[in-house]
Image (tube, rainbow, N blue to C red; front, side, top):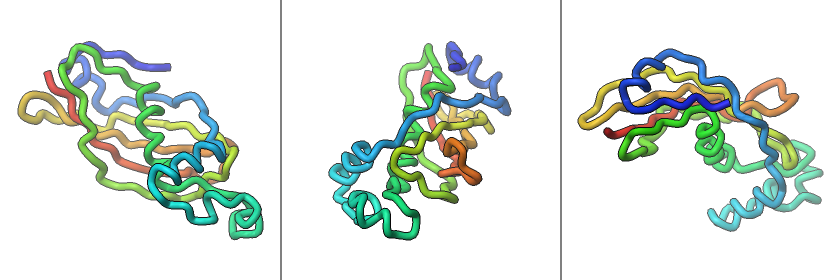
Length: 151
């Protein structure tokens, strides 16, 4: 369920709020292969299901950066900021990948709007995010994302 705010003033009021959880999405082998093609990272642990089945995780796993890249579509399910001219991904403070995402697993994002700080012409938000694996004991990724919204 998405939270929608209209403008920077409404966004400021959400500082410290839990944003909830996104829907689950499946990380298919096809998605992993497409990411491998886009990045040139064709390591067998990602793209060779037969060899990966004999590897340390018993199946092919998603690239950590594929999991990280899914933050954006998952985040847009949590928070929609309208009434601004520009939305920019500004960067990351921290990223960890505690557990691999096996092909066919489902993941979702749980987020908290940790802070909203003024920057020239707008605000910068810090989001504490956890990308969970359905049925997993540990998350796939734990991160702190920075975005900017300009009036």
